Length: 230
View 1 (tube, rainbow, N blue to C red):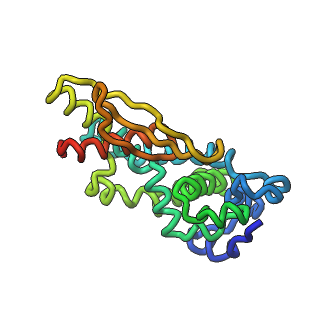
View 2: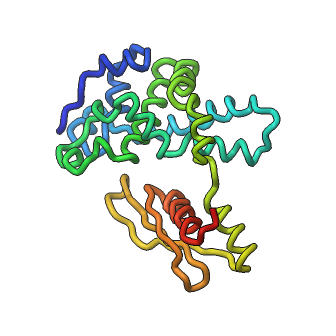
């Protein structure tokens, strides 16, 4: 098992001292760390909880924008909770260096893997919620995740590329695109999908992601560039 850095600096960075240190350890234990998983448990259940907490915190935050439609707020929330953004947050607080994982996982670049980093952020939020309560979990989200909203909007991260590609293809070509999974790689808990977007029989572009939805979005984004519809 590969040992992570001391948690002291992480607690200083996020401004929280955990009452139950095992809760923090569990949040930062990757499934591949078999010995640690057996004694403490891995972080997938905390990831599940943290995902729900982040969804609520983000929704509560965005509700203040009273001049925006439900559709706009939904796309903004999607940008905030997207794995790509959470992986960036993880890098900002150097979360990868604290994760327990197998030596094999580390050797394959596990500490830099976006899906692993994003999952660890969600698990950390779940651990904060259980150990410190909703307000502390919310404070973390406010300070490290929600504060990036304007930057995400400026970079167009809130855009639904599948919707844009479909609107353009129907408007200009009278064709509704469809998507197919080309390949799946990796173990069940850490798969990478490759999806292709088609216009009838034309294979326009491909995209990768740690879920089918993200791979389809990546394919649509690439398809927009291929067709010069941006």
